[in-house]
Amino acid sequence: MIYLNNKLVPEGKALISVFDHGFLYGDGIYETLRAYKGTVFMLDEHMDRLFRSASMIGLMVPQKPGTIKKAVYNTMEANRLDDAVIRITVSRGAGPPGLDPDLCPKPTFVIFASAFKKYPGQYYRKGVKVAIVNTRRNYNKALDPQIKSLNFLNNILAKIEAKKAGAYEAIMLNYRGYIAEGTISNVFFAGNNVLCTPSINTGILDGITRRIILDIAKELKIKTMEGNFRPEEIYNAQEIFISNTTMEVMPVTEIDNKKISPAPGKITKMLNRAYRRKVAGYIKGENKA
Ligand code: PLP
Image 1 (cartoon, protein in one colour):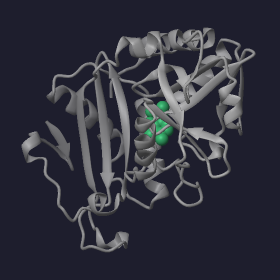
Image 2 (image 1 turned 180 degrees about the horizontal axis):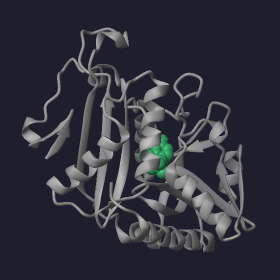
Image 3 (image 1 turned 90 degrees about the vertical axis):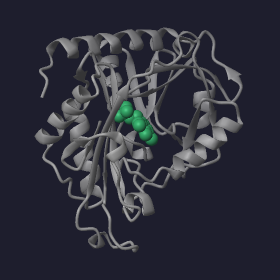
């Protein structure tokens, strides 16, 4: 069952117009969320980011946060899901071709959810390969990566390069040549007991997982540094990992064919465990919407 506009409909009936500006121009925004044992993790934070992205493109989300939260749970329930990945999409809606948002009187609002498919265990036991790609992250004064937009070609081009290089994830640099982020993840690296990650003003998405990891690191008294980092700095790192809502803390074993050993490293393991504890605590303490 899919939540479309304001009701649950069977997948076969969840149809949107070919004139939807989300389809025609990538004009819209989205969020990906994760539910553990029936509780949606960091629902309020995702809701805040959804509304922030929408406001950055002048899009009115057609539902109130409280209604959306209920709809997320209703969608999970209708599909009998406990461990799930949920996506909320809001597009500009259908209208005649043309870029003017005023052509579209009614945004399209969709929630779908599916069972969470575990990543292969070896991604966590051994790590994944990443490659620094030539595709640069969108210049943030052109299309700000803080907008979680439906326009993903920048990331898709980077992903194509990564695949060609035999890597699981791409690491993009920003227009100035500093490390930015992955195609769907934030990036961290550690050396000499300092955990480093590109600062938000390098032009990256303010990842919710990234923020949690930085908080956990502080709780664990791990020194953290957010800033502008050159590729040499990540090449020389003792540990690297990537993060997002579904991957959590995923170790990297190789960058541009340079082995990181041992992977996962000490800090990565500590953060991975602490992240899981954080999730477990959240599930116990959190009331459903
Ligand atoms: N960076 C990009 C470009 C992303 O698309 C994502 C998630 O989809 C992230 C980072 C990680 O964000 P979060 O931790 O909120 O899932």
